[in-house]
Amino acid sequence: MDRVTVFTAFNPVQAQIVNTRLQTAGLDATVEGEAAALSMEGYSLATGGIRVQVPSAQETEARRLIEADEENES
Image (cartoon, rainbow, N blue to C red; front, side, top):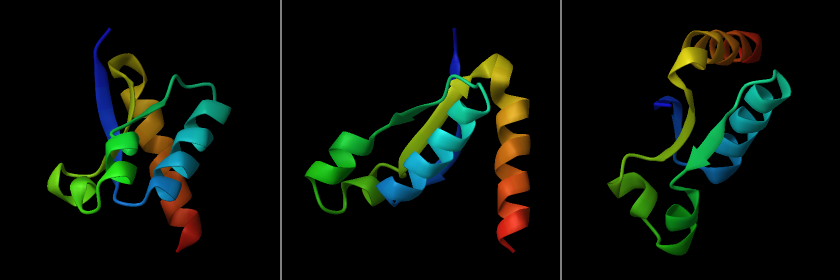
């Protein structure tokens, strides 16, 4: 099962909030790169951020939820 990145953050808290939101909606979301970002200052920026990923079959639904949340924050 291929996983795709649907959200990238440079702040672990932001990545975890998005991850939890997706999991609450029933998606199989995971956070990748968080441990390394927390262990080395600047590592998150150097590697392109902390990634929230879902199975490719759930990508469309995940992106829709993230976009809806971003619109509600505006």
